[in-house]
Image (cartoon, rainbow, N blue to C red):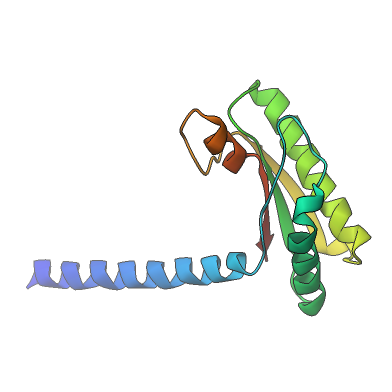
Length: 137
């Protein structure tokens, strides 16, 4: 009986955890990530549409705030990548502000190379990791 109860509690915890993760992914899914060229922090014209969609979302959700996370690929020192991720996050924030989003709604953080999307050691993977993520709060 006890092991059956533990299994049921474990399944309930997994279901609740899945629901919470689903909610986080849904909130995160409303905002689009952008990518950067190697050793660059300027928002590319290729991502103008994504940035406009992110700005529209932020403006249509007045009680929400947005955290812009700056990320890098594995090349370069930890210190350099933290600084580059910071420049990327701040560049994306400035772009959102240029599109009319209040700077008070936007905060930035740099994760450098610490949270890769891809762990292979090639340009296709590195490109995925050179990014800014926009997280709704």
